[in-house]
Length: 258
Image (cartoon, rainbow, N blue to C red; front, top):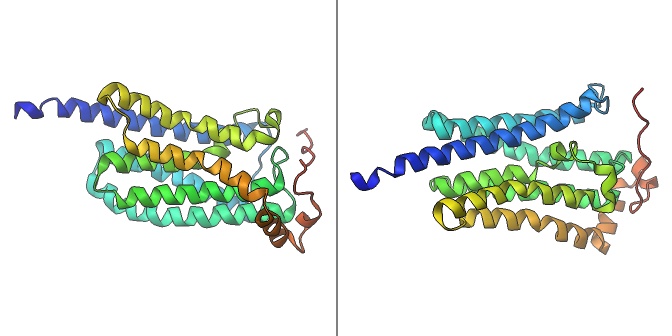
């Protein structure tokens, strides 16, 4: 029994770390949207799809933090039952991620600091990365060390909209999307450093997550700058106002709120 004694403090420390990381991630997302709302750059007068998209993604944030709390200090039975709701919610996120990307491209309303064709490809790839990592986390749910790290990485893959509202996006030029993704990787890097200090090695789940997220950038550039990217942009925007928008030109910034 004495050999098991150090495990309890280590597990408690692990739980505190993941709870704090999940909380900081959630605060980052909420702070980004709250900041834009306070500055008048966001409004409740947006079209219904935007509201549904926002509810879906904020709902995931609530589920994510709740699940981490249940896993680290609550009811594991409830965590497992709620996990299947979260799995279904993840499917909703993928659908809404594609839907909102196609919608803004068709309306010609891609954020002015993103190149429209690149955004059309890169944004869905982040959602697919989220889906891939979430699926892996669910499949490895019986290995808690893999499960919790992969879920953290999955949510990091879609933290960009909140994080990007805090960073000075218009000043980043054509690499704004890439820079936000790179900054988001600070979260798993912190986890990797902690593992290295505590265990003497980096858990392979962090490597899988970081590599999956990092691959979004080269894949996005490769596809967006290929005939496939050209075809997809034309196919999505044909017959809509977005067809008149130049796919490789930045749009004009919106008027400043009065």
